[in-house]
Image (cartoon, rainbow, N blue to C red):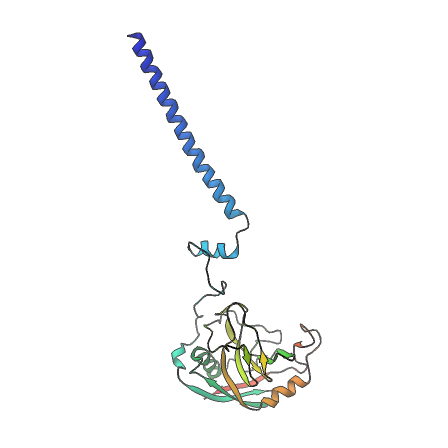
Length: 252
């Protein structure tokens, strides 16, 4: 009898020991997993990994412009307000008028934006802060809040429309300026090519062509002839020598 009791006591002792070992192994496994997971995400995750985790995605985004948000800011008009319409008007720079036409058939969202900006008088008094004069890129960029090129970060929109397949922007082209690599980084600035120009696409694509100059392109060529002011990005890219202000921007 004593031998049987001793055997039972030994079996109970072994079961308790096995349970303790199993529990300890489980705790260690969980802790190890947590440590490994913490190590992976603490070791400088990429921007794509961070964005994917933040958005609750399983994989990093495959978007060509990961910093863009595929929504328009409040106040951006619907593309339907310009769909299929053509607007004509004028852009007056330093007292000199330039005839313009905006195409809501090929670029309805962009046309809706610039018709709205024209109607509200938003661009009046703004600067044409950037001039490029190289053989391949000849533009005057306008619509900045001041001569430093300041933009309104609360007014962004997309998508890209009517971007040239050949990446060429003929003289007289009016296109929308945007932040790099961002299809929804369009704003209130635009540029006018005063000579045939070529701009390579970035990861988001090209630049939305919203219209063209119908008269007065020589106003811009005269501004360009004075050259780029010293202190710019290069001798061919910077502020125009003569400060340029938008006196008015009207569309009918």
